[in-house]
Amino acid sequence: MAKYRVGIIGTGFGAKVHAPMMNFHEGFEVVAIASVSRGNVKNVKKLSGVENVYTDWRQMLEKEQLDFVVVASAVHLHKEMTLAAYQKGIHVLCEKPMALNIGETEEMIAARDEAGKLGLINHEFRFLPARTKVKEILDSGDLGDIVHVRFECTYTSYNSLISNSRGWLGQESTGGGMLGAIGSHMVDSLHWWLSAHFREDSAILTTHVPEFTDEEGNVEHRTADDSYQVIGALENNATVTLELMSAARQSSNSLRLEIFSNRGTLVMLDDSKVFFSSGDAPLEEVELAANITAPAEMPAVAARYYNGFNRMLDALFKTFESGEKHPYLSEFENGQMTQKVLDAVRLSAKEGKSITVK
Image 1 (spheres, one colour):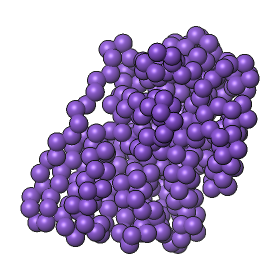
Image 2: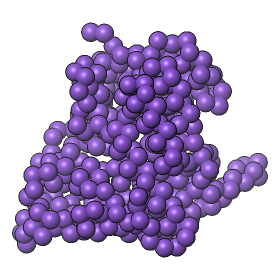
Image 3: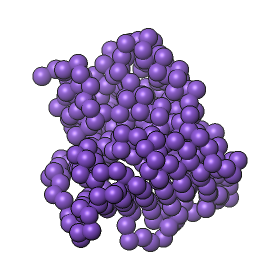
C-alpha cells in the first residue's frame, strides 16, 4: 500500500507527537521535518525519528514532494506557513488554534479554496471514545433541549510553571496561553457536540504565574494567560461556563463536563468515563468503545495521545482514499468559528464586558 508523504513544520509537538504518530500509522510516512528556529538537528532527529531534517521550512516545501503538511509551529506563524503550502498545492493539517485572529483565518480559507486542497485543524480529542460517545448521545436527541453546559479543566502544573520557561506559549503576541492551547479544544468540542455556536460571552483571563527566573537570573515575563473563566450563551439559548486552571497543586479530576437538559443529565470525567441519567434517575456509566494501546516502541510522550490521534489518522487516511471528508474531522471553517469565540473572549477580558460573537 502506498503511503501519503508528510512534511512537518515545527520541532516541538510536531517532533514529539506528530512525527512518531504518523510514522507508526500504515497510511503515512514522514519524509521530512523542518525547524522554525534552526534548532539542534541531532536532537530533532532523536525526538522525531526522522532523518531528513531541514533548518528552513521554506526549503522543505520547495524541495520535497509532499502530499500534505503539518503546521505545528507557534500560532503567529500558522498563516504564513499555511499560505506557502497552498502555493505549492499541498494539503494542510494545522495545529490549533488556527490563527492569531479572525482576519488570518479568512486569508487561510481563501488560500485553501484557491488551491482546491484540504484544510484541517488538529482536534484529535474529538476521536477519543468518551467524546464520540457524548456526540452520539446528543445526536440521538435523548437529552432533549440543552439548558446548561459546565466544562472545567484543571492541570496540576504549578511546579512546572514556576520551574520552566513557557517560551512562545507564555507570550500573547505569539498566540500563547491556555485559552488557545486548551480552550480551543473545549470550544471546538462544544460546537461539535451541540451543533450550536456561541452567541455571546463574558470572560476573565488570568496569569497566575507571571514570571519565571532561570538559574542564571534571566527573567521570563509572561503576557499570556495560564487560566481562564468564560460565561456564555449559545445560539440555542443554552448557557455555558468554561473554566481552566493550570496553576493547581492538586485536583480530584483533571477534566469534568456536565450537560443539563429538560430530559436528563450527561457527565464526562477525564475523557475516560461517561455517565447518563434520564429524568431524575441516578447517573449510570455508559459503555465506551475499547481503548487502543500504543505500540510498545512508540515514545511515551506520543503514546499518551495514541487513543484519539490514531483514530483521527484513520479518518484522515480514509478521507484521502475516498475523496470524502470524514464527518468527525475538523475543517478550517470549524477552526474559524472557534477563533471567533477566542477573539471575543480576549476582547471581553480586555474591556470587562460581555461581547457578542460575530
